[in-house]
Image (cartoon, rainbow, N blue to C red):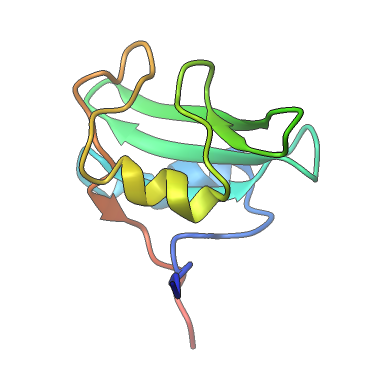
Length: 107
C-alpha cells in the first residue's frame, strides 16, 4: 500500500511545530524527528488545551508504539492511519483523533 507522507516534516523543532499548528484547528497533527534522539519520531498535535508532543517508541520487535498505550504497528504511517478513525490512547487526548494533517508546503 502506498502511503503519502505529506504530514512528515523531518527535523522540525518543537517550537516550529507549534507555530505551524497555531493556525490550525483541534485534531490537526504532524510528525517530526524527535529533538532528543534523531532516530526517534514525535507526533505534534493541536488540542483544545494547546499543543501535545507524543513520542513514538519502538518495541524490541521493531514495532512502533504511540505514547505508552497504543497497539504496536509495523510503521508510523500505519499508526497514523489507525488513529484517523479511532480515539488516541493518550491521557488528555482521549477524545481526539488525527483528523487534519498539516501538510509539508512544497514549492
